[in-house]
Length: 172
Length: 414
Image 1 (tube, rainbow over the protein chains, first blue to last red):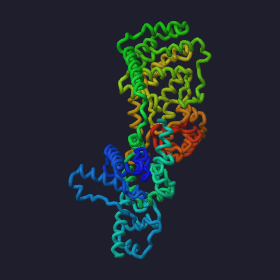
Image 2: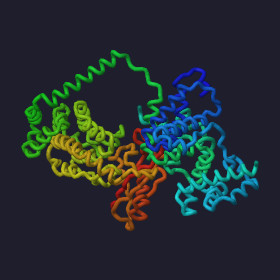
Image 3: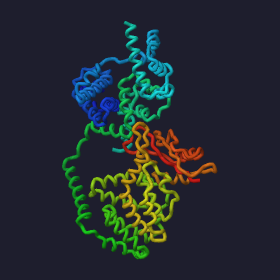
Image 4: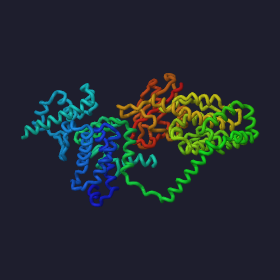
């Protein structure tokens, strides 16, 4: 559909395509901007941005590209709102692959992963293991570990990041 | 735009917002429907885990869900709807001449109504002459002069009631008095249009009169009336009206089927108390009750809204907020209440009281995932669930997306 839009530049085509991702785009905007009105504005600005784009992006990865566009747009808005402080804290995301070894279809069970897993902090390790190996939902892990769901999500995210760094250093 | 269109559109048309990436449930990229079900906690443990696994592998989804978790589903539905309206290509405008003609017609209607309601002298005499034309009605006037004065005063106080008084529809009750045999309508005659109005055509006419009067009223009043006409609060007073029209109590009170927004309404009770006995002509009963109904609705609609929000706050942190505006029985609240009352099977181990049930609707409109929120007793809860299931289909209100949970009280009477 993106290819179709680029060929004919019809607003209707892009509108249909964008509607499919609207919930996701709006959610991402809310996640960064924390304000409904600003997130609605940003969602429309991103649509306008797509309308004015000249193309040249990989059609097959439209969704990934849209995510990067949306996220960067919101970060830019945040930066302009909060001044230069944000610049130091937030780096703009680059378009690329973000797959984590744990999120592959086949979970990587290599020795490196297990070694790195052992090296994680206790909470990160237990949350990652319960989620990926025991297939427990955030809520279940929160109940088992007597944690808040937000904490569980945070431990999994940080655990994954540390695991990736650890595995990459071992592979080098 | 009809509700059904919205519903399909927001929930997942094959090409629309339903399935970004076209993924079927359980595989591929989750669509709007799955996201909404996740946010509304409608997923089983397995589905939930599968969804969260996808979130972990997909930062777009992960961050979107993080952002959306802060909203309740009604807010989310409203925001998405407004965004989609902005994105969609605008439809072709009708010919300018037609638009101008429509605007002129509207202006004329509005101007006439303003003149009638403000400048034109209030036709109290007209009302009197209309009411005394019929000898049957004269009897009613002589039997309850105080009521008539009161009704006339109220009518003059209240522009809406006044509009209703002025409208020719009010002559109909007089006509009806000539043939009282046809007056009482069966109380539970399933209203085919889904509106719980069972007091006969006069009520519909009165509502039409109110709607006509809306054109000239200020925004706030229009808003109030819109609430009255569209929300379930209407059905409480329909019930009262129904009791007045038929001259018999249905045997259940408002709070026996209060669905969130329906709170006890002292003025409505007063209206019942003041209404003429069934021995009087049906015509007076209807004429008075219509005005009192209108007045009490106007006076109390704000209070009812407030009490509704007090009783059922929209939980900010809970995705399944108890929003009383989300759904209503397809047969209307009156028929729903009748069904609850008439089909109740009570046993000795039950007690009087209310059971609060939270549930969502399946794709056919049947209540599903019913949870007891306010428990009364084991057998009572079970009976309340059975009654809800047997009460017929429900429908989400306009603008509601996904399958959020709604809430209802079922009153058990031993």
